[in-house]
Amino acid sequence: MRTWTRFSLGVMLAGALAGAIAAQQAQPTANETTTTTTTTPPAEAPSAGPALTVNQAIDRMIAREHDEVVTIRRYDPIIETYIQDMKPDKEMGSIPVHDYYFLGQADLAKGVVDNSMLNEKRGKLDEFNPLSHIAGVFSSSYVPEGFLQMIYLDANGFDRQHYQFDYVGKEFLGEVRCVVFDVKPLPKSGRGRFEGRVWAEDQGFTIVRFNGIYTPSSGIRGYNLHFDSWRLNIQPGLWLPAYIYSQESDLKDLWGNRIRFKAQTRLWGYDLKNVGREQEFSQLTIESPTAIQDQGAQMQDRSPLQAERAWQHQAELNVLDRLQKDGLLSPPSPVDKLLETVVNNLEVTNNLDIEPEVHCRVLLTSTLESFSIGHTIVVSRGLIDVLPDEASIAAVLAQQLADIMVTKPSTDQWGFNDMTNVSTVEALERFSFRDTPNDVEVASQKAVEILKKSNYKGQLSSAALFLKQLQDEQKNLPALISPRLGNAVYIDTTLLSSGPQLQPNNIDQLAALPLGARLKLDPWTDQVDLLKAKAVPLYSAREKMPFEVTPFMPFLTRYEKPGSDISADPAKADLAKQQQQQASPQQ
Image (tube, rainbow, N blue to C red; front, side):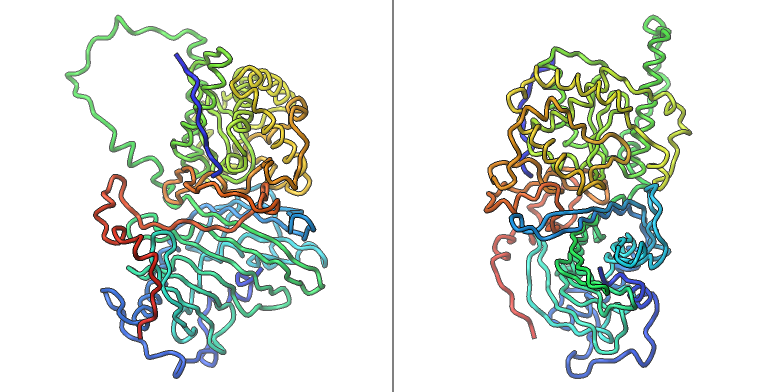
């Protein structure tokens, strides 16, 4: 017997230019290289133990960064970049007016290569520039390779011969204590060098964050774009790029146009070759032949209807398995269980008994979409992020629950395993789970009936406000709102009319949240989990930022094997004490 359960999710263009890329892929000539005499002390040999001086820290950081570049080039992660062009607004400070979305799989062994997973064609001119004027004299087009380049601080030339290092101090990023340096290219050190601040963790001296710009700009289309790049410790001793935030607030191009944008780049899928395999094999058991018994009395032939249902279920499993192996679907996670709790509430309060049981999974992309495959509801990470409360989540899930009940989309073709045997780059081209407009409308009518009989019937005003905010942003954010695999959020007129008027200036009315407000993603396992951020009060309507891009500020931790005893880590034992200390440079 299913029971209703209550829960709450909580509110949880620059250095990568063509010239910069060329500079980082080629060694500087002799007349471009200069050594330091007065500004930088002589290099000291890297030590295997703790760094006792600033110079030792610099040497170990340089050596680790060289190793880091080699390590990063072994992987082919999925890279997603979402960009919002901004404009000043008298009341809101700035608002998005247009957006761009890129999704691809990097081929880092071949350089800064981003193999697009989308069907859209993009220009080839200056393809390494984050911002390239290729569509016309007064129009701009972003190119994703430029943002991918921001995973590297300096791929060829991060050393004392090209940079000046100034020690700043020590700082905690989350629970990871770091030494902090300001770095600046030396004169005549070549183009495409990094200028800004770096944070290196104080055990292995891996650079875990770098914030700044590639300089100087190069060529007629050269721009300097600021960025903030983060790496996570996702396996023992392994730090890999995970987040990049880029922003320009008032950059002028060669024609006097002002460029204002904010961009988020996420990387994941570092271990796609082993997704789910180790755990499955470790749980595999081999039965002894002596355990086989005569079960003839219990065996039954399947009727045509049972065979059809079994075929559909096999097709469902084939699709889910392939999407997970291609890095588009999170492995089963606690977030799935929370979504299934909402589905269960909808079923129980409507006296529904759907068999087989309905399950939920999370699509890993930022686009706002959902779909059903067999008896599994799939909701994108981006959509879960921006939904303001449980009732609005219920509205999205009710739409797909109704889709399962009423329209029952066919999955016959996916029953053949070869039909789902596609690569990561091919996945979005080969798979589509979009319903017809008529099926969407029919399912929506049933969804409204389910919601009005559910325990969420008195809270649907928040779902209506979300739909109103979404409707208000459709023109400005088509790339975010347009689905890639499934269905866009359906704006039902009946539900839309049930809510209050949208009040952008009212800080007590949260119609939608910023991107990244609920979920975090493990770049190695592709597992999603809820953010553990506490709710904070808004000071003004400018902080509401519905559907907007915001900076990344991850809470860095060192990798721990699941089930390990964290109390045995002496670094964590005195974490609270160490975070209060302000370290001074050692001479």
